[in-house]
Length: 484
Image (cartoon, rainbow, N blue to C red):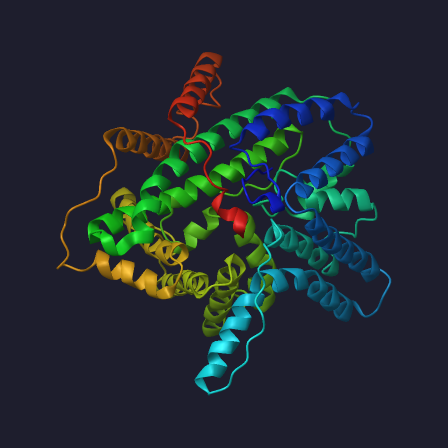
């Protein structure tokens, strides 16, 4: 769900860290559960209408893109069951579904790249660029629809005949903005079966997820963003140490921002009786870049593995071919994230690191607790420097930031925010990592929000809510991954 103060021509879009969410979600929740559980189709119709109404808030005409991708993949999947030309049909379906994504997201990038290449040869060619905004969530709902179509093609699932069910699967409002990218085999059966009138354990678990996701977003991500957005856009005015601190804080920001959104999306789904795909599993405690991708944006890494890496041959081939498959997979990951050479370089860096780890047999850790700690720190630093390319607008800017970090001639002073901002920033980041460490190494003994004891559970929930209200940064921009 989403809300973002864009220009008036684009409308407003509701996100989880907004007053609109606080007002609208309880209303949606009450109306949904007011429909009797035996009326499953009525509930699905209600959720479909809500999902499209929320999408229409932003730019109504773009709902046609969502509907178009839905229709193309729905009809293509049905047609696969009554044709001998399966390969040609699925290829046509994939191309048609990808066209809006390619047009809106990559037209300007391809146009500028071709124009620059031709200008080197002395030729002039340039089409007028597009000033239109990219349809929100287009990468996520397109990949989700393509995953469904390819699963039907490979006979992993049967084509869904009920258009209402399929349309809701593609447009389901909790996850359409920034994922997770759900598999049809997980969600469609839930949409088709009768759900409980009111499942209290699921609702309370979902509300706890929303609470902690909100903490990650407004107390951690948006707080450290104040430092990041001061230093990195103006990196030439700050010392190398300040740039390094800003890069580390951006690494924390993008995790807290995206994982916070994902947790809230999954929580909203759970509160409505649905299990959505897990998207994060403490990625900064990974012992390798390979391990990082088993923990970071899990739904995307799973999609890439199932529909890019394995069809290319996976690891069931020669070593060199396997390395090539890894490289191509993460090149696609970089391209998926955005039409910019910085994203492509970011994807290539992750792919190359995984190839090196595979060559050296370093995907896992077999060096005891001290060795594991060292590998976690090394992995964090590799990921951190890759994020610099992700954050900066051009490759040149990213290289200059890294150059300043390692330039010994620069002063070693550090830019510090106000004492209050510094204290709140350290507190938020400290609590986030403390929870991750406890969840990773003491998953049963140190649970707070999900503790079996009601007193501990309620105390932790109330403290978290108070911290959100007192320390949160509200009115911030859209979630980072909303633009993808």
